[in-house]
Length: 79
Length: 223
Image (cartoon, rainbow over all chains, first blue to last red; front, side):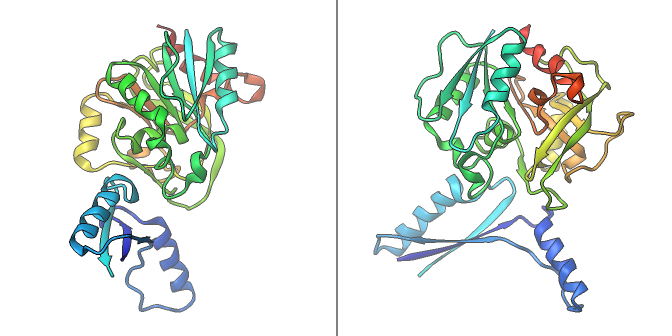
C-alpha cells in the first residue's frame, strides 16, 4: 500500500517560494496565474493491507514528524 | 558555570560555543546526540547552530527526536535553562519547547551579515545584562529564520514579555530582515527558562572582529 502525503503551508501563512515562482511566471508572460503555492510530496510505502489502519498510521506520522502543524497543512491519499 | 553543548550530525557551531563560554571563564562539555543523559551539575544547556541532519524535511525536525532531546525536554520542564542558537532555536520550536515555527526567509536567500538587534525585554536570565531598548550588533547566518506565530500566540508573547529581540536599525526601530512576524529575532518560553534566537552571540566576542556585544548576552546566564 502506498500513501501519498502532500504538505503545504497553511492558508494565511506566506509562502515565499510560491510567491517568487508566481513572480517569475508573471515575468515570463504567464499573466493569467492567480496564485502559486509550493509544498512537498512524501510517498510512504507501507507493509499493510488495511486501508483504514494505514490512513490512521500515516496521519500519526504527519502529526508527529512529516508536517509541522504550526505552519503546515497536509493531505493523505492511500493507494 | 558548567555548560553542556549538544552535538548532532551536521552541527557546526559547537566549538565556537565552547570557546565563547570558556573565554568567559566557564567549563563546557560536548554532549553527543545519542547520549541518554545530560552531564550532572550543569547550569545551562546550549543547542548550538549548524545544519543538524542536513536540514532534511524541515530545519530541526529530525534532531528533535534524538535521544538527547528527551533529556533536554525533561531538564527544561524541571526549570533547567536551555539556550538555542540558530539551528538550536529551530530544534527547540520543532520540539515544542518554544512556541511558533521558523520558515524559509522571505527573500529565499541565505542571509549572512552583522545585524542590529533591539533588546525588547530583559527581565529574564538571558538578557539581564542588556538594557531594554539597547541596540546590539550580532551576526546572523540563516536561510530559515522567518519566525511565524499566529495572532493569538503573538499576543501571549507580548503580554508575558517573551519577545527578547527584534531585528532593528541602529536606532532600535524594527526592520524587515527575513520576514519574521513583527521582526522577531529571539523569544523565550512562558516560564522564561528556555531561550531561542537566530543571531549568533558566540560570534560576537571581540570588537576587533566587528562586535563584542555577545559577551554581555552570554554573561546573563552567570546570575
